[in-house]
Length: 295
Image (cartoon, rainbow, N blue to C red; front, side):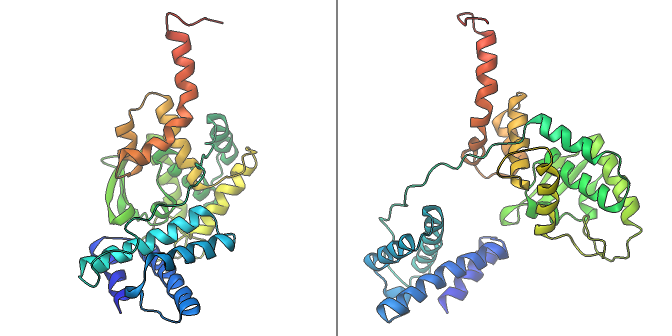
């Protein structure tokens, strides 16, 4: 019962997305199942840390990555904090737990040339699918939005008068992002061909059958186009978001502004993108510093 009330707490009070709440539920249920199979009980309020540690060892032995283990334990930790909040337990069994060490995840952004090559490939295709693909790439690169934010944009979220788009970010936080003139033109062209599709959908991006676009379709579009111009291992919407932030920082945008555009709650989240800008920074430094040896 407390697991269900915890999920309601995440969804209604903490404003977590349904996807995140379900992920938390699955992780907690996974531990509950481990307790049932290993210790023959399922009441998580009776758990002590050695039992959790054995669960962690079991996951590691089953080749689950440290990153995934930490995510699962983090969900469980949130659950025990909730149990403390509602006075079901006094002390969390995870109070002194230290996460497993993980290698820093460094994603390589697309270069400006790779982005330009994709735009050239998209060209002036005026078909519905061609304009939709162009709009998807432009929205990602011009706004830095997440894939979940992109698929949930409604036509009413586009404000041509103020040249902005309203997006719903993590924990249902709204933010307004400026729209370049070029992307406004693409939106208008797309809306013209979209009007020929039989649909009642309020969402901006739809399929040929008039349904809202889905995550895997968006990923496939991005992967297909960027596979033609890039040899990078990962070619996803998130890499374009990474490129958006990196290219802005390379051109002198301040970190706080990029943070607001990305919808991050803290600067720490935005700072992961700064490592990619160090090369540009070093180049400027070497050119400008009086003590630098000019080549």
